[in-house]
Image 1 (cartoon, rainbow, N blue to C red):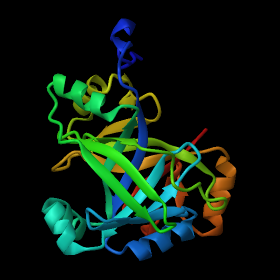
Image 2 (spheres, rainbow, N blue to C red; image 1 turned 90 degrees about the vertical axis):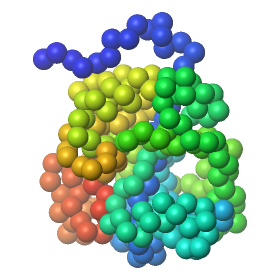
Image 3 (spheres, rainbow, N blue to C red; image 1 turned 60 degrees about the vertical axis):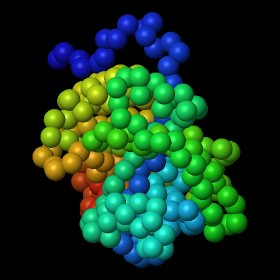
Amino acid sequence: MRSNRSTVPAILFFNVSRYFLDHVVVGVHDLEQATADWRALGLIATDGGSHPKQGTRNAIVRFPDRSFLELIGVEDREKLRASSSAFLQLLEHHPDGAISWALRTDDVAEARAKLATKGLRVGVLREGLGQRDSGKIARWRTFQVEEPGFPFVLQYAGAPTADPADDGLPVHGVAVAIIQAISGAALAHRLAEAFDAEIDDGRVRFSGGEALVVDEPREHPGVVGVELLVANEERAAAHLRSLDVPAADGWIRDRRLHGLRVRFVVE
């Protein structure tokens, strides 16, 4: 079978920005209930708090490789309306499920400039602030790539504000963000060209982590799920069996995931 791996000459990969799959954001209507549901499944939030400038609140499930899953909901409607009425409408009217994904880089300003020179529409560079329930403050800089199906890009100021949970599902990290589009091949090639990544059978491989782009009719391309990397598949399967959670071919099927599609892959 002929491979879809990129054949861009290696010399072009010098002096390029490095990107790492950082997290997937899941919008929910009831953050407290969603956090409890995920905990019951073994996805345990160890961090989270408020975004005081934005009017949202989150819960974060951290993994050992630094990636994470983020549950997010409305905390202050008027503040969020002033910050982003479109995001308020999305959180209030969109069914629970994945709404965005993020790539982490070492120099977000440089990454933004390079993407702009490639003809991509990029949003303004913004300062992010998270006031954690632990009392710690998380800071980052970020911008949105304003293209269908694309991620936002960010750079943190400092280390994560919490460690992964010691119990629950034995997940090492978010290995893959699953993106759907009317033409998966076209979106995969656009992502690869933008982020200097390789493609192999629909998988866009970043410096860390991947995006799997699949064909599926949808009004707007976007993220729908994740592949979670587990070091011990049998232990993960046993954990789910103990909870009577249906799983087939690695996929977890449970309403308590709040719309996020989840599949296990073995390390």
